[in-house]
Amino acid sequence: MAALAGKKAVITGASGGIGFAIASRFAREGASVVLAGRTRAKLERSLGNLKLQGTTGDRSQSHRIHCLDVGEMKGWEGLVRENKEIDYLINCAGETQHSLFLRTSEETIHGLLSSNLRSVLFGCKTVARQMTARRAGGCIINVSSLLAYKAAIGTSVYAATKAGQLGLTTALSLELAQHGIRVNAVVPGYIETEMTEALANKNELQKKIPLGRFGTAGEVADAVAFLAKNEYANNCILNLDGGLSAV
Image (cartoon, rainbow, N blue to C red; front, side, top):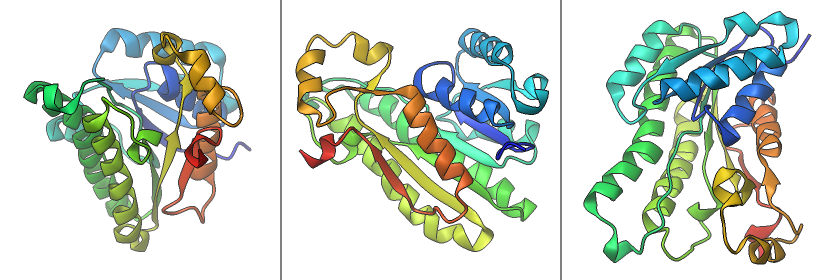
């Protein structure tokens, strides 16, 4: 039997890239997957792709989408009402914006805080509340970024939101452990996605990475699946940067 068979996972940011890779991995291991995000068309496309790949135990018909503004508590409350018995929450939704701090608009700051930090705070709060009421444990995994602690010019606000995710992960791992709920995070560096494909200095960046390449979304998904299945992993902050954090 697959390790995640019979479990339900809510994954934000699952319409593409790392989020979809995580959803795909969980589905292959038998979990029922809820793809959560803002854009229905993208989520429906991803759901179709997920069902086409097939899943362990033929649970493909149990996958679904849920549209919400991840930065609003009201949306999360609706998700929890419609999806009972959530075992895993994977917070992967987020946005980035390259801008020098003194030139960053208030609107941009609010947007990044909503997409990257409020979304995780509200998601953790509502789903953890359901998990504690069920008394069946659970696991929350936050997808942060290497920029949370390795600075780069023009990423101040983004870095602050991602560092906030790590602080929340550590604090919640203490608060929720008594309920059997584990809280962990993965910290990707440069990953092959549509976003990094457009980088003009991609070759130069790869040379700075000890392993000499960008990671793949599948490799991040492997790490998330490991944290989900390892029952002793709590406050585990897992770097996935090819060694770049050591440079």
